[in-house]
Amino acid sequence: MYAIVKTGGKQYKVSPGDIIRVEKIEGNAGDDVTFENVLMYLDDNNNLEIGKPILSDTKVTGQISKQTKGDKIIIFKSKRRKGYKKKTGHRQLLTEIKIKEILI
Image (spheres, helix red, strand yellow):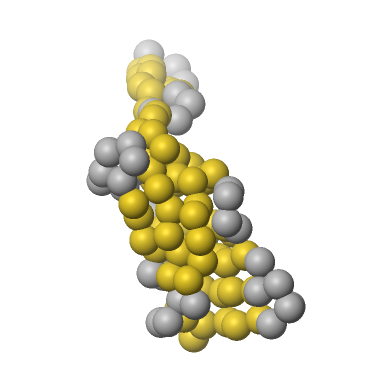
């Protein structure tokens, strides 16, 4: 059994018990989260439901494990022969979520 949910502009394949890292969702560790943008659902009997674009009656619930930051990404810009160099970095704020169940 799994579902495909959309959050933060990305799609994730989730099953009950999975731990996923998504772009920051407001909340503290231990708070419950509900994903209502479910794009697809497959149950244990291989019954497939595909949304057009989303399944309105299906929801995925989870619990926030922790708020973290991702790995640092280095951005380096330069222009040849001009002496221009610029180096910056970025760390994306992430939320780690443990999927509890898929509600139909």
